[in-house]
Length: 426
Ligand SMILES: Cc1cc2nc3c(=O)[nH]c(=O)nc-3n(C[C@H](O)[C@H](O)[C@H](O)COP(=O)(O)O)c2cc1C
Image (cartoon, rainbow, N blue to C red):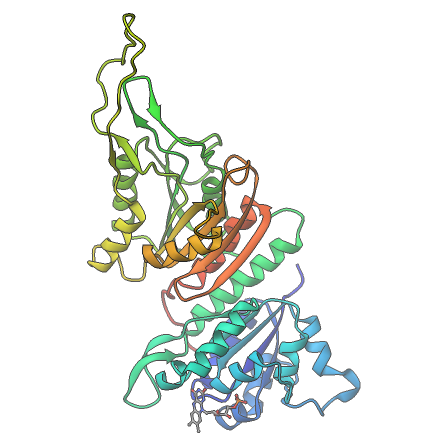
């Protein structure tokens, strides 16, 4: 495999020194890295540091090595562009298509994934101009990491701190893996960005008994959940697979917890999550209602009349809402990434996406994967079309694509949100 070509842009923020650690993570992982600092960045960390650590020439403006046309070539040839720290100034210049230095030229010529890791004081990060620039970039498909919350330049604390280099690197590797998978004919991402992680995936459709032989079920085949588990395993995760009724084999290597009803599924998911999970992805189709009093014996039809029994239904608990509450109340680690799936149909009150956005806000999960169902879509099909809605306002449309590719896009989004386990040193 050829070494991935990464352009590492460095903005003029106090956290520029952390980009040296990030550079080291890339080069030790075998990437070929061209560092493109801004003029301001060089006031924080000098050119010799970047040149020595990358082993490659370093340029800031468009006027050096003009015969090689670096302002176009670097972006075009890159497999990934990462900017850390991305200053308020850089977010603004990138959002509005300015090209007054080499880095902003690279951002305009790149056709590969672009990952920005902002860092700045809380007041700057929360300023409406910066909020709008960030939203605009995200809308265009640029991956903008949420900054960490913590100690800033001085004694002050708050959101705006550069994410640790390991988190940026993990998000970058997920994007490189996703790009490789998208470019390959099969989904064969070799990235192990979920190594050391425990994830819980629920799959399939629940069955709510009416009597010993009949049940209320749904049309879920379990394919999307199985694909999620398989891709998480391929990316190095330990997977607890809470599986209701599916039409597909269990993925090799998953710890399978078979369940049938919504209540059983809820109990199994909560137990696995409480035992310590980095992420819980609720892909199962869980019945909203169950018969209040299932009959212990087969319900018989009467020979004397044409009547049919009335079945009283009661609400099942909302498993995703339960997970959100458990996290809020401290029974799950606050860093557990919670992902829901919403099968929607458009109607007179709104489109699929509008319903999805409302549901995302209501549910309080970190990510909601919305797909349109009905008319043969989603259920049982091998392809799917989704929008991955983030609680942070991000939206990524994926597909139509095989359910494995959808799964990889979901794990990419999860990988960007799981905190790093340890920090390395230079
Ligand atoms: C000590 C110091 C620290 C700074 N830290 C940040 C920062 O963390 N984030 C930020 O957006 N700007 C920061 N700035 C302001 C930027 O350096 C300034 O906006 C500059 O124009 C950014 O240029 P660039 O985006 O081309 O790198 C800092 C300035 C100084 C003097």
